[in-house]
Amino acid sequence: MSGTPQPGEIERLREAIDRVDDRILESLNERARLARAIGTLKAGQAYRPEREAQVLLRVKERNPGPLSSETAALLFREIMSACLALERPITVAYLGPRGTFSEKAALKHFGLAAEALAEPSIDEVFRAVESGAADFGVVPVENSTEGAVGRSLDLMPQTPMKVCGEVIVRIHHNLMARTPPGDFKDIRRVFSHGQSLAQCHEWLNLHVPNAERVAVSSNAEAARRAAEEPGAAAVAGDMAAEHYGLAILAANIEDEPNNTTRFLVLGDYEPKATGRDKTSMVLSARNRAGAVYEMLTPFATRGVSMTKFESRPSRVALWEYLFFVDIEGHRGDGNVAAAIEEVAGIAGYLKVLGSYPMAVI
Image (cartoon, rainbow, N blue to C red; front, top):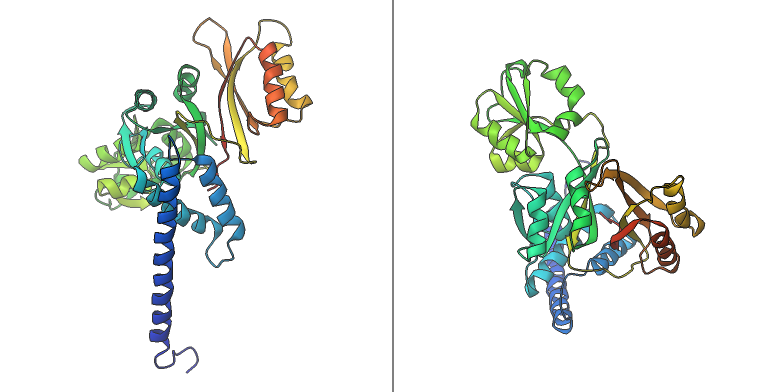
């Protein structure tokens, strides 16, 4: 019969898999020994985001399949995380509680071997890194549909820490509850973070139009509240559902199918150039006509591409603004360094927040 396995075929294939697994295990431990040997030669911070970015990019470029390049890169991320933990596990602060997209971003960037430290606010994430309680912090800075995360931007000019990495997380929202209701109309209250409620506004209007929408501090907090209150539901990610024991009633309910959040990694470290970098900075323009145009012109004249331009109130004087700018390239690159030096002579204020590898996965 066509498609029927021949006698012993499955067993032979399983034995072949066992031999491959043995080689993988041997190679993993060889890699760990080499990584530990390098660690003994390095001084200071063991984590090198520029090196990890190069490894992940190389894996994606050389991957022959059938595994997707993204899957291969995620596997290697965990391998590097485990090898790094042999020297000393990295502590990473993120906006908690557990189950938030910030936790997902921290684990995506640092791997499961990192010690994730949940903080109650973005301010506390900054404070944990600045005080040395955490080696690094992960904070959200912008969402593709809802725009900038104001508190993160407001704290950037004040911190002595540098931006040393970025993480891009695809945001999937789910409607979840402790006990599935007979009908969505039986849901009386929906908890979620205000931005998540906005990102699912049309779906909620259509499917749970009569439920009260309650904005809370995080999606994980929403899941906790829904777990305690009969007749309530939450809009949150799958990690929150798993952590709080909720059933997912409807998946991927975000209105925008490409909903994505960008996170920045903070730490007392300045990555070296990789050839595929970004530089983030904050500027203020002098109070005169055409000042903003004049301030940004050096980037254009030196061929430096600007990928982000965001304004925020300075909080120092009325009607004064700070401008958050991302450009392609490392501050050590010749054209980037020259452009920054020229901008510094024009701007009223300039602070380079950091140069770091672009997100790979």
